Structure formats: C-alpha cells, structure tokens
Amino acid sequence: MARCVECGLIALRNVSTGELIEVDDDFRKWRKVTTLPAFDRQIEQYPRCVALAFDLVGECEDAAQRQATATALGEFTDWAQWLRPILEKDRPCKEFAEWRPGSSPKEHRDMVDRQRLLEFQRKREDDWQKWQADMAATDKAWREGQATEEKRWREEQERRVDRRHVRELQIVGGLVTIALILATLFGAILERGYFWPILRITQ
Image (cartoon, rainbow, N blue to C red; front, side, top):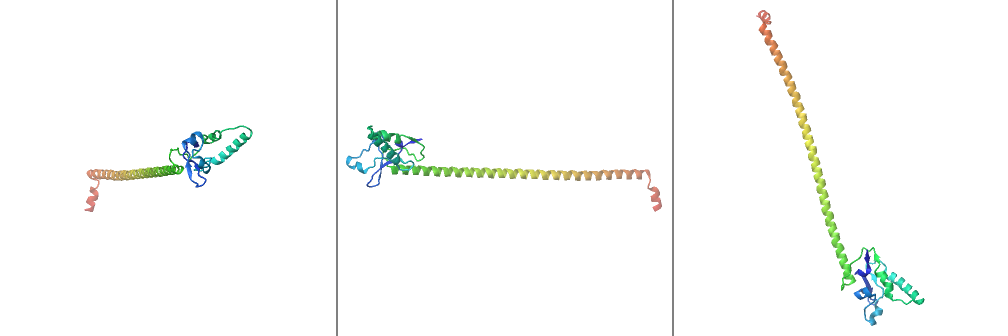
C-alpha cells in the first residue's frame, strides 16, 4: 500500500503556465501552499496525481463541497482537516515513487521510467538466461536419451552376435562330434576286417 503524501508524483499546477510544481514539505505536513500571496491564485489548491493513478482533484472537490456544507451549517473547519485523509489514505498504487525533496514531478516520473526500464531489461536478461538454461537442459536430456538408445542398440546387436556365434559353435561342435563318431566307427570296421572281402573282390 502507498500514501500520496509520501509520493513524488503528486503536484500542484500553475494555472497560467500549466507547469506542474513540486508539492513541498510544508504542503505535505500542513496542507497549505507556501507561495507568495500575489501568486496564490495562479496555483491550484488541489494536488493532482501526475501518473493519473487516482483522481485526487475530484476527491478534493468532493471534500471541498463537504467542507462548504459543514461551514453553511455553522461548523468552521480548516481545509487541512479535509485534505489530510485524501493524502494519507492507503492506496494500492503501482505508480508510487518515493518523494525526493527538490525533485520536480517530471524528474520523479523520469526516475520511475528509468527504474522500470532497468527492471524490464533485467527481466528480459533473466528470461533469456532461463531460456538458454532450459534449452541446454533439453539438449542435454536429448543427448542422454540418444546415448541411452545407442547403448541399448549396441547391446542388442552384441547379444544377437553372441547368439549367432553360440549357434555356429553348436553346429560346428555337432559336426565335429558326428565326424569323430564316423571316424571311430570306420576305424573299428577296418580293424575287424569287415571290408577285406570287398577289397579282395574288387582286386
């Protein structure tokens, strides 16, 4: 929450020139214009919000009407009594700029604009860095996923090769076993002389 009495964006307007004048400490404390009497009529008595966040002039006019009604009824009050609640009211204001004595409303407005520009640039830089970090994380996750898939593919290929080698070894082993059996049988037959009659006939 913010209070207008502490804000540098409230001003009094010079009716003849349109210039926005700083609301000084006397006005903020005692709610009175501290200009020379000859120039009083050139300065509006109601403060206005330079940022147009609230219609302070309209609130002051309403307060002035209530004061006039109270005066007509015989209740004489000081204007500060009616203005104080307006300036000291807690408001949900996003345009608030802490008052710096000696700085004009325009200078306060420029300070706010510069601060917002810096915040915008800082946010844009933060967003850019966050985007880069997100992209790096996404790229890392994709690369890790690709590496995992490639490893899984290689392992599957190695398992297939191993299974093929096992089958080949089993086949070769079977053939060698059969060859050994046949050789053993053939040797036994020769040893017993089963082929001698056949050999004599052929001779």
